[in-house]
Image 1 (tube, rainbow, N blue to C red):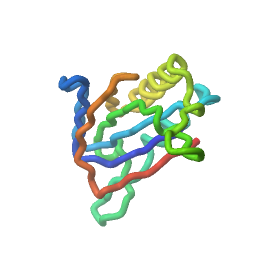
Image 2: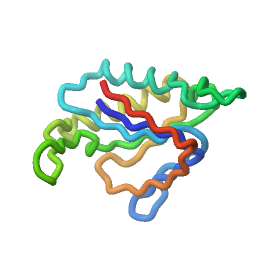
Image 3: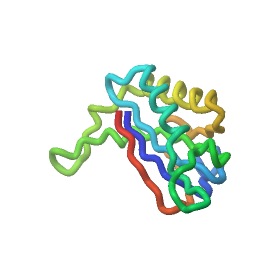
Image 4: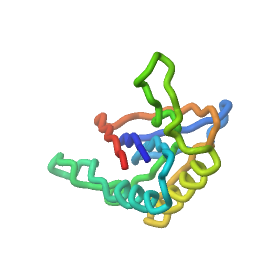
Length: 145
């Protein structure tokens, strides 16, 4: 699993011009399931995400989590994070999990985030999505299992 996690003031996800999901303050999470990932990885990621301290406290230090600030998560499937750029100029995606299994683990992870008390809004798995987001900081971190 890989994820790009961005702290945002707001984010909106649309498909074919129609708004599907919208969040205020929180995290935009671009999430990729790779071959060999298992359900226990979903829990590992969900727990890390909910507790990740990347929001500033009153002293300006990154000491607060998305839960601490009452934030939301826009959870976006993005298989292109599995891109292999080692040969040629066209990325290879052989490390990405098959769509059926990837969707299953994506939805499982979203459910676990919600079970931990964080509103998780979803993208549309496999769709061509447009994401408008206002980054805060900017703060961007990468998680790799």
